[in-house]
Amino acid sequence: MKVKLLCALCAIALSACSLDPVYQRPASPVATAWPTGEAYATSASATPATPADASSFAPDVGWQDFFKDARLQKLIALALDHNRDLRVAALQVAEYEAQYRITRAALAPAIDAGGSLTNTRSDGAVSHSNTVSVGTTSWEIDFFGRLRSLKRQALENYLSTQASRTSTQLSLVADVATDYLQLLSDEALLKVATDTATANQSTYDLTVSMMKIGSASLQDVREAQTSLASARASVASYTRAVAQDRNNLVAEIGCPLPDDFGGGGPTLLESDAMFADIGAGMPSDLLARRPDIIEAEHTLKAANANIGAARAAFFPKIELTATAGTASTSLSQLFKASTGAWTFAPTITMPILDYGSNKASLDVAKIEKDIDVADYEKTIQTAFKEVSNALAGRATYDDQVAADRDYVKSAQDYYDLAQARFRTGTDSFLTVLSAQRTLYTAQEQLVTDQLAKLSNQVTLYKVLGGGWSQTSQTARTAQTSQAAL
Image 1 (cartoon, one colour):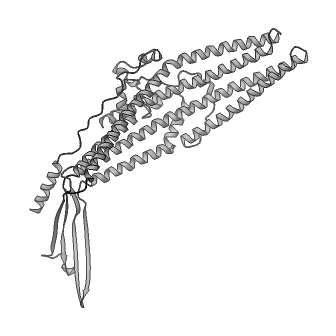
Image 2 (cartoon, helix red, strand yellow; image 1 turned 90 degrees about the vertical axis):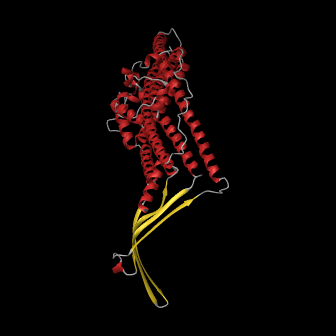
Image 3 (tube, rainbow, N blue to C red; image 1 turned 135 degrees about the horizontal axis):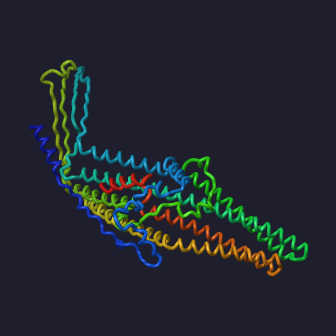
């Protein structure tokens, strides 16, 4: 009868209904399409229109397929293996997974075996007591779903941490790429400054020679000298920047740079094939593809489950203690017949007067859910803003860099003409100096905008949720698995 009663109680517990609120995903607080207008002229054409093109969506493109540069691929691989922030994020996932297993284990009774030997002397007499028992102590029968709500909360917290780890990886991949581009940019600017310093040295030498024959004044020499000193200062500044960029990369990847890691900034910045083309999809795609949005939703689901646990606190709490074994005053008789012993002690605790503690706990759980709803909506709005800004950048940086190239060409022609006219005595040295400064400014602007253009492509890839996996096929598999969760 006791066994039947225990089985009946377990069956009732397993069939108990959940007190969690029915979860409904909050409505997306953004538009259903990306912004349109002159700044987004190329956005529509860059968005795949058919399912056949879906492989070019950013989250479906592995980072090795998006980043075409072999040196950058090697840096990202090293960072994923050695970066300490990513390592901490992975350990946090393991920690929350273990905490989920702890919470899940509370649903089942813990069975322990124990034995005791007690000798007591009283009034000159010695008594003995020997016991061996197997049983469970204080097993809460989950009639009202409190433990199951806590289990769901722990599971959602684990999944949230897992999404946070993925978000950390996306940020790491993008940060390595951005730091790499910064190095290329500073290498290109160093070359511009070095070439300018070399040209200024030649101009200075020429001006000194012309002064000796009376074709130039001392003022021209001093102006040439000033321009040369400025160029040398720029060389020193960009030399320092390149060294610091390399140090930043070392810290980012968590290990020394590869031995074959050389220069190449000017050439690579000019390349239009550093990254693969990607599509933006639709704003609704972000809900299933951006790890930070996935993380926020799992946090919201955890808060939803916590409400169920808080509601269950209003109902009776039933715990069961049961043991079975043998007991005897003589060790030799411990396992003989008629030495059996058992205890069965169910207890019930009913909240009657708690001065509003349970009500306050439920209110806190509901408020925390409302906060998580606002955080979830804010995360979506931030994602929409980031993608929209990156799309605006993709549509306009091409024109800006093209205009910069025209600016550099015109400035170079102006400088060459000014130098020729100065040599023949047609123009003063001030014209040469002005043309020289214009050319240097144009070259700097071109490199700066090339960096901004490439960095924006990296940003677009990141904010669309790209960088989950190394290859595109693996990325699609990971997306399918995540959607199933």
